[in-house]
Image (cartoon, rainbow, N blue to C red; front, side, top):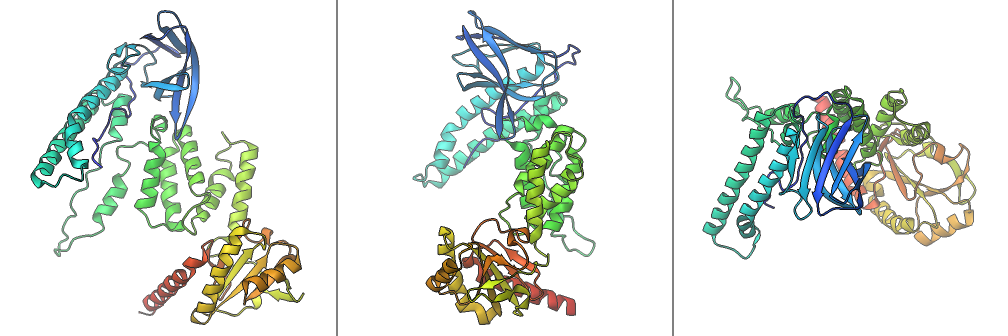
Length: 481
């Protein structure tokens, strides 16, 4: 996909001249609007909100004003639930915008604000560059064109236009470094990674560029600038996710250290402090990668239970986070699984800890669960094929109180392992011991009943055990060398 670095829209905000006027007063005169109500909206992460309301007079004039200054960022006008155009709110919050409904951007005239002058001029510049690039992009996206010379010419033409856009951005940043427009355009600048230096012995440090990129990733993005939360794109969370997901091994202990460093950068501003911690909380509430739920527990214990987030969070939300963290912490990777003692189909007590296999799969299911009826036959197939290979046993826990349903399910599914009735327990409710609120849930234990895997599907089990044993063997060889 060929795109210019910045298209028609993108970010900007704006400190022009320092001004001491209190509050804000943004005056509009829009030809084509009259006798209607408009709203002042703003972006916040992935959401949009309305901040103020104004009535348009017969001449298209209206004003948004208030006693307290607005948080800086990208704002927009809303009419009948339609976003008309973006503008910016920076240090100077007393200015005027005059334009025409036939073309809000090209016909905009800004008074008393350098920032919005830069913002609209940049949008118009990008419009022209996009128009200029259209014939080249058309060639590059046309799969029927096979002429190498034509493709090369189009690529070169597009490249030159893209260079114009980059140069234009850098010029704004250089000439107006303190403006919000410059700050936000700066977030689009690429980090130039140098070639790795040669060691005295002539070898090359292969990890140099990764370390450099990690160290300089946020050079152009200030994590303590809350205006970067209020952009047309959720760039703040995107940058954080890219940094955590792409530049580090997805392992809880490693990511805890990285998260701590990021939060320290954002902590100087309560708004970014709150926002970053919340973004991370949502990110690791139900992570796709096994074991990273430990990060949710870490975030709760470090920033919520400690009271650090009390300046904004209410008691109800805090309790919900606590309940989820307390549920997750029961089945974290590396923890010793609690014992389960329950009655089997013959009304005999069976203990999880009595199993002496190398591995144990604890399988929580419900006879009436549709997903379980799909998952159970797959687990049976895996078990029959790999029981001896991996020296494993399954300890299946039925969530239903009915013993007859459990017996019928065992027979129907041809379940060859130990199956017990969860409610008929000698150790209390398994819900108080394991994070198994939904069915089916699989939790994998080693020979010491330590949790080594969880919440994966039966089709992934063979690959999991193969990789796990390979890793254990490699660790054993390393320890013995």
